[in-house]
Image 1 (cartoon, rainbow, N blue to C red):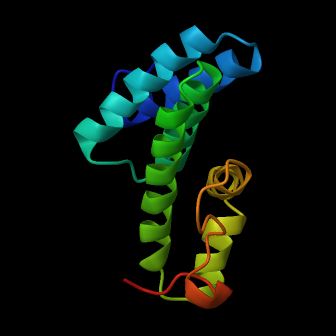
Image 2 (cartoon, one colour):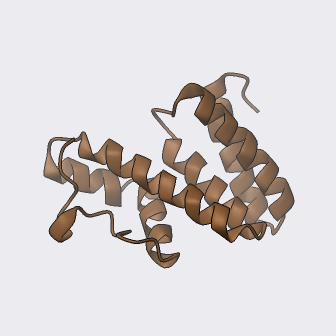
Image 3 (cartoon, one colour):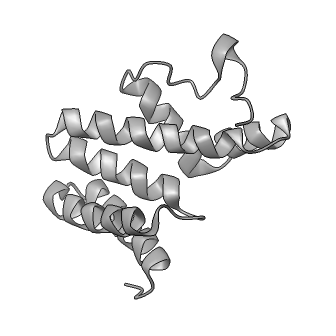
Length: 131
């Protein structure tokens, strides 16, 4: 696994995702926790932030900690929407939310897990506005 914090966090999230697919929830959570610790220490990632945060939420849920998984996913969704709100062009913003796989998956999980207002849209059903 990479030794630089940002690539290491992304690699750990990928490892956690593979472990989740294999049904190894405990091992997935260990990798996902380490990835989140790196992300938090860095204040976020330019690339891979949504993946790390989403996989952490998924690993928590797979490990049986539903409340913590919902809280983690709500934070992941909020961070994602904050980033999207800084994109001026509505088309680019929509693309960021729907065509970037990890971003779209975060919003889909938020809807599936019943998070309030999880559509990824701002008030009135439109795209989130600029911050």
